[in-house]
Image (cartoon, rainbow, N blue to C red; front, side, top):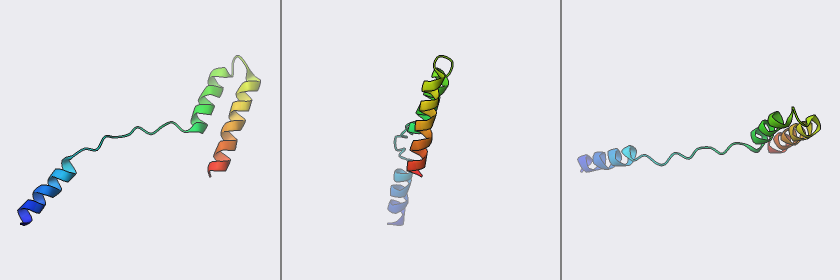
Length: 60
């Protein structure tokens, strides 16, 4: 009986669940967009950074 339980435990632990890649956070996405826009439109970049900080203040 214990051998059956060991086999079952090994089977369960050996199965690899599909690893979900974490979605990038909203704040990270906004900051990356701000970096890309910064050279062309500094005002829009600052608005994106402000939005990222606002998102982080709400989330925390």
